[in-house]
Image (cartoon, rainbow, N blue to C red; front, side, top):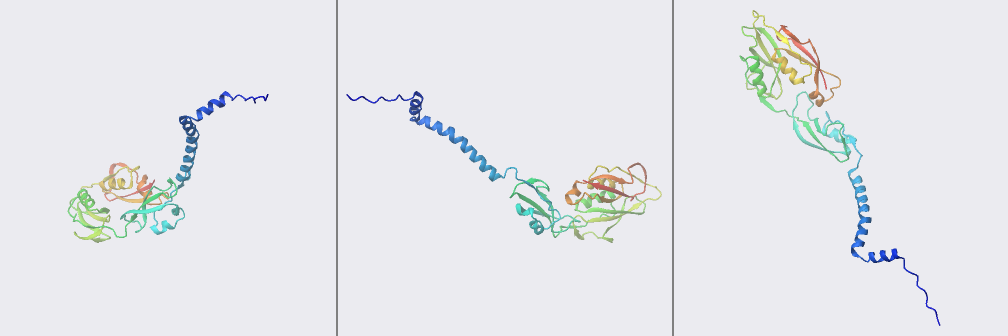
Length: 268
């Protein structure tokens, strides 16, 4: 009689796994446990490539360059330069860049947009008002409201101190209604009552911005002369500059002649 072959017993563990694998839910759990970490790794790797993680470089300073000159810079080829506006700023080369966003030295990635503001070729024109007969304070307010500025103050003997006797532009008398560039400076000839012996103080302008220092000195019937430190290299630097020294020094006594020039030294 032929003996029957003896079957090897199936291991319990293998038998259980086999049964579980037939389960749709179990298979999906296994697929998820293996696939999700792998998918997360692939997505993370792709994001690193797309966002260029930790691959940045500083934005160059385009101030003072024309748009064409900025485009020609090596670093600019990695950026997208766009002109978004133009304004007119006196004493700045026309047609050049004077403001940018992001600011120079900001760390950016390839393809970043850099927004530029260009100094306009043609300045806005304004009409000169008549300030003769006004006080210095009134003349200042009227000129500023018209987009103009006060230039040099000169004094001549007169019955009324700080009364405007004449207004000049580029060393010539300028009449009411004349059109000139916005931001231009109007020089004033002012009266000074010699008999009164009126004098003025020199205020402290240390720590003030250029415009604040100029306003304070003019309010005290003083002229000013600006001296920028070598660290002031562009328009943005000049806006950020603060007075760090003045000559003569501040004085609380009325010992200075009206129209005295105060030299102010500025740096960012």
